[in-house]
Amino acid sequence: MKKISIFFGLFALIFVIAGCLKDKGFEDQQYGIQIAGNKAVAFPQTAKSPVVVGITGQSVPVEVAGPLLTIEDATAPAANVTVKLAYDQDLVTAEGLVPLPAGTFSLNTLDAIIPAGSKTLGDLKLTITNSDVLNPNLKYGVGFKIVSVDQGYKIASNQSAMIIGFAIKNRYDGVYNLKGHHNRVPYNFPYDTEIHLITTGPSTVIFYWPEVESNGHPIGVGADNSLSWYGASISPVIEFNSTTNLVTKVFNNPPNPTPITMFTGALSRISKFDPATKSITVDWNYNNNPLRVFFDDLTYIKPRP
Image (cartoon, rainbow, N blue to C red):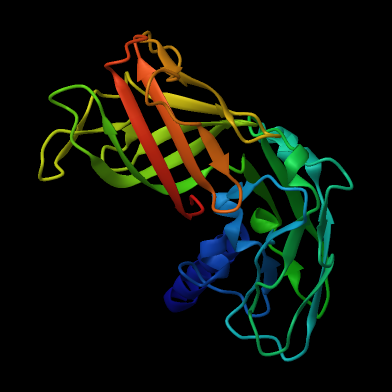
């Protein structure tokens, strides 16, 4: 009788554990006791949702990776598994993002097929048809949910929905090589370093210096190319005319009090963006002082992550 009692108690414990554990760790057999046949389809990126991607605003279609689908089971399926998806923009609103307007995006298919012998489908593609009209000051998103699946698979209840978010970058955004010099003695040595220009509006970008992990701008302080800076209190923002690509304004990032302006005095150049090479020429100064000028040449390297 005692042995039967112990066995029964263990059976009851197994039943309680198996009935309560519903999360991915259990379904992945990372812990708990796996029930045979408890197989499901899931969005494994749910824990990181919204998954944010940066795209540069442009009038031509932009394609990004769509949601990842996985089989949550010890073995791969013996036959193709069809997973029907749907958009769910209420998820986007609940996350505090702006839903991409209907008709401005599409998934390559809402009837996804995980092929036999595979546990993952990663070739879903999301296309945004005209990102140029989107506001870089807003963060957009598209919500997805799994609505049905065949071949006897279930929908993983805690991984059945996710969001892909978008940070819209303007055409001036990117990673650049910055070369130039400041005309203030003794800080008038040339500088040569990597700089990031980060979108702050439809036609504005701010200098971000990765070496100091802050908004700001370097200064040459030695013939050996040693660099320094004034600190984040001098963080120039460049504003462009989106039609002519000429620089219309350079100003200090609010609420920094030191005035920054585009330099137009003696030795100044035409401050502009070249769309063919994506290079930028910009001359600017602070405190309206012609002896506090930075002469900058920025050569485009690659998109910013």
